[in-house]
Length: 263
Length: 306
Ligand SMILES: Cc1cc2nc3c(=O)[nH]c(=O)nc-3n(C[C@H](O)[C@H](O)[C@H](O)COP(=O)(O)OP(=O)(O)OC[C@H]3O[C@@H](n4cnc5c(N)ncnc54)[C@H](O)[C@@H]3O)c2cc1C
Ligand SMILES: Cc1cc2nc3c(=O)[nH]c(=O)nc-3n(C[C@H](O)[C@H](O)[C@H](O)COP(=O)(O)O)c2cc1C
Ligand code: FES
Image (cartoon, rainbow over all chains, first blue to last red; front, side, top):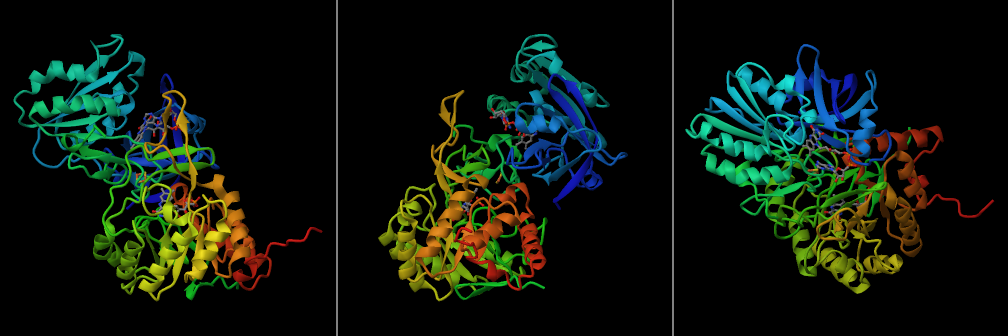
């Protein structure tokens, strides 16, 4: 069940240029949330900005009874959020949306993330490790200073490949280029499952590569959101069958092959 | 103890707070957040004869103290509404108002008779005021004779209370209100969204795919208050005030302007349980002032200057 609750900020700090990690006391969410789900936060005390702001659950800390969010400060809402300090309270709805599907037979997860799209990846990796699954993470950013959560990605069963657009770390180029280069490693097709999270243009570019990969891909989407719970019908995405689905309630995780990016 | 109950055209409400169409889904989406039984009633998303996919994206934009929406009456259609959505409301202890629309007066009547035929439905709200569709909606609500035609068709299709929902996007709202009254409406609700638009100066593109959209939220509250006040002078029907209600103080303002009840809309996106807090606030306001019945506030604005 989802709920609205007031959470205390347990910790809050900068993790990169304009990138922050916010830890919230939310014991009820720790067991309820799955990787890929998000929370809808009130960033203002009043009505500026009017809407809540959605953020993926970056990680949960069972021992501390907390959830972690990671975000980039880009506008009014995230600027207000960045001012909150330990002990402050934040109003939150969640967990919202459908998580990644980790059921069924696969041995290795192939995870493609673009920029802050990496936000839900540590939580996803934790869940995969608990299930004894291996993971290959491909993360593309503009420049190496944006690799804000590398430590949270590292761990058992996990290999990490980095792409930077400016070539300051790893492969020079985009994450889709990187996947193209590594595709032969996954050529056998069997035993793999793909997970993609990042901006729409990245997902769009990835779609044909994913289709050629021979294994199924799930993608986590972002859209402007008002309600966050499937009520307003404002955050829809078109599917190949021409129907609209809400990103907030039917997603944010969809079968990448079913998405129609040509709308 | 203050009596919070009110009557809207033969429909008794536990209290004067309802949820506005399109901002509360089909009544169950917010079930985990609070008990809708604490409200006077809920109004469903607009239902049409056929299912509608709605408008292209983007459909939403945030604006100062408000928001633009261009959903375009996306809904499951009357068939699935009756078979899937209404049964889920069976156990809900509150009034259920079904909001209807169509391309023609006949379609309005058909959706009405099918919806109102269901025992769970307490009243019909007629949407002649949606700015986000080409046919129906605003095309009816901006013209007195078209408003009368739709109202009369719906009136003939049910004996349950008929509430006509008015648009502010007209020169003289009183004229439209009188037309709906003469055609047999039991009550009027107002306002639907205000036609609005916004442009991204970086990309030079409209923020909404369909360009114009409906403005809601605190930005439109003074417009809505003025419309309620104007319509109050023009008709005898009970009014339901809508537009930018965020706090109980706003609800009191609508009652003083002449509304018998109110609907909350955009509020739910910020605070899903906001309508319940408004009921509580209304109760406190009345109790602290020794007001025996909330209906004493209706039209209670003092006009003469002292
Ligand atoms: C399901 C979901 C999960 C998300 N998870 C995260 C996360 O974990 N970390 C994170 O940093 N962000 C995440 N986002 C995006 C985040 O919600 C936005 O960055 C935030 O709403 C911006 O608010 P603001 O008030 O600071 O910016 P605004 O003032 O609203 O916008 C500033 C500028 O950024 C643009 N913008 C706003 N939202 C987005 C967006 N979603 N994508 C691209 N550009 C945008 C606006 O068009 C505008 O130009 C997520 C979004 C969704 C839908
Ligand atoms: C996302 C959204 C969808 C809406 N959909 C409908 C609708 O289907 N039918 C209708 O009559 N009004 C619809 N409305 C209008 C509201 O019911 C209400 O009249 C308007 O939002 C003003 O109230 P508010 O400022 O409290 O939101 C919608 C409003 C919003 C914001
Ligand atoms: S944001 Fe309202 S339906 Fe998704």
